Image (cartoon, rainbow, N blue to C red):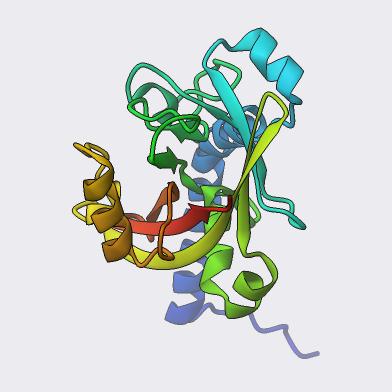
Amino acid sequence: MRKNKKYKKNSSTYVFEAIAIIAFVVAILLIPDMIHYFMDVQKSTKRLDSNDVSRINEDYYCNLYIPDSDITFPVVRGTDNLKYLHTAVTGEESELGAIFMDYRCDAATSPHTIIYGHDARDLDGSLLMFGQLRYFLEEDFIQNHSEICLDKDGKVKHYNIFAVKVTDISDEAYYLDFSDELEFHEFANRMGAPENTEEILTLSTCLGGENNARLLVQGALVN
């Protein structure tokens, strides 16, 4: 009667088993971080109407949306540009923060308004927050979504998109301190805005995980 031979593992088998064990341990260790991030996603992407937002947050300013898309956000404005980097529109602490206007701007009166948001993704990789601005890197999306709207107290401002660019934090597009109307018009010309543009809206987000890289989408007010 033949005896069954004992199976001997070769060195590659041990390596694969070790990798599998390490991957399992790492996955277990990451679970708390994943849960925390999931909760932050829920806080920062919670769909609220303007009445709800204004009731719970006095910093609520307006709604921003791209017509014919799912891109729509309440916009807040604080007393600095730090608070809403890690605070949701609900006022809760969140890694994803909120969509917020530069505290030096007032879209009702400023010739140039800048709105910031994180380049975020859901756990499944789908784009969230201003990560959705990446859609503007696709030609088909730009052709079908050429307008940005700001709705403040039922009054809607429409901005035609004239520029989408990858740049850095030193870009002149972040300039806000205009001494007079002439200086703004010179700025608008350098940005590539249409002739006689009276207001510019700039949407800004980080890009690619690099500290200084930025993606900008700029629009000119439609009178």
